[in-house]
Image (cartoon, rainbow, N blue to C red; front, side, top):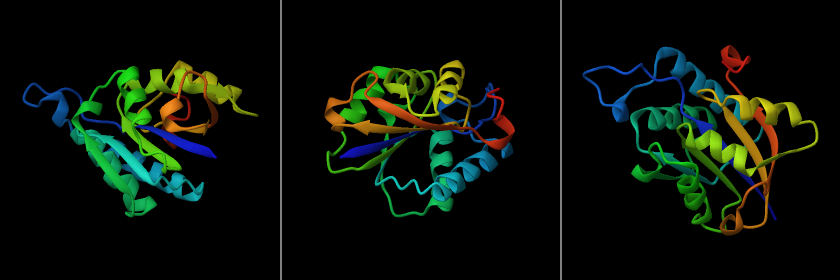
Length: 176
């Protein structure tokens, strides 16, 4: 059985504010629009995660809520403080611990861990070589990597997934 892994970086958040902890940074208006757009894009593409793993930071939860408003609410959502600014190996372990019955997982997190994980797992699929190059260059806010995973979640390893697509919000098409 081929599994599907969706890696979504949180949408654009407010800049650091002396009175606000990084963990509590909210989305900007641009970020809210991008999160909703990515939810619509996932719905249009027929992406249907049965499990969502999401950092508990304000910006990742807001991205999740806006995307699910467009995608539909019926999902098993698991919030984890351990995903906040998690490094690549911690994200990989979270995926390996996912229930094996899951066909599709959406992981919403932060850079650099998410970008590093996407690059570690991905090999180009047919026609996706440019997408892989773009992903390895920059994984912008609200960027979405769609990977096909052969095998089980617990056996996930480097280059064990094929990058099917790498999407960015319309105003981020240049990857900046």
